Image (cartoon, rainbow, N blue to C red; front, side, top):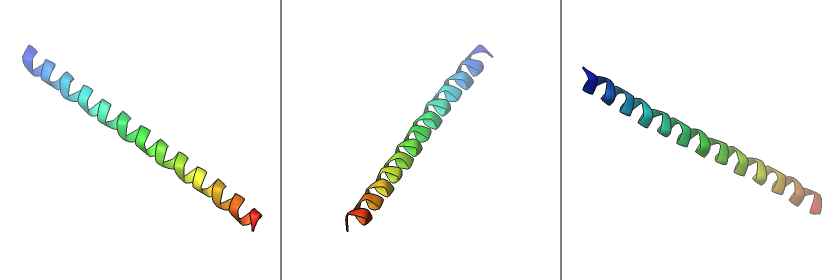
Length: 47
């Protein structure tokens, strides 16, 4: 029984790490999109 609980906790921890990593990647994608938009706006003003 204890082994099952330990395995469940291990899986939960791995799932949490994976979710946090995906969230960071999504935030990084959002940030880069925002920077691209700012660059596009700057480019249009310079033209």
